[in-house]
Length: 140
Image 1 (cartoon, rainbow, N blue to C red):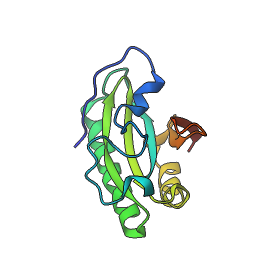
Image 2 (image 1 turned 90 degrees about the vertical axis):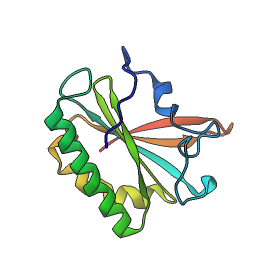
Image 3 (image 1 turned 135 degrees about the vertical axis):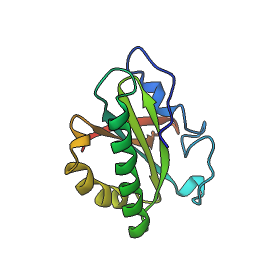
Image 4 (image 1 turned 60 degrees about the vertical axis):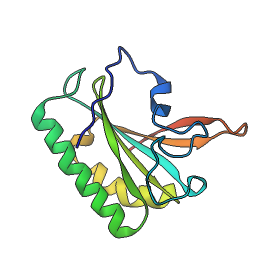
């Protein structure tokens, strides 16, 4: 189910870390199977049709698409889907896995062929040399 987030006036880079643990590894409510040290996070940021939460049909299409993405990564054994957040004209799909490149190998072809991904981008969560989490924006 799509989870609304608080609406925001503009894109705030700190938002992408709102669901992260202070160490930058995994969601704060981490109930998944991977150990935090083994987990790498990937966000798929979809543009919605309006500046709020999109429209009902769009949200249903995104939910079905997220189910397809989740099935693909589970079948490939490369990671898991951690949920989503809606608001501010975006829907963010959260994924994690032990090897972000293998996760991308499975997700990218599906993302490239979906009309829902027009104007979308990826955000790879990385830890810098000082151990601080930061985002790396990437095209789909």
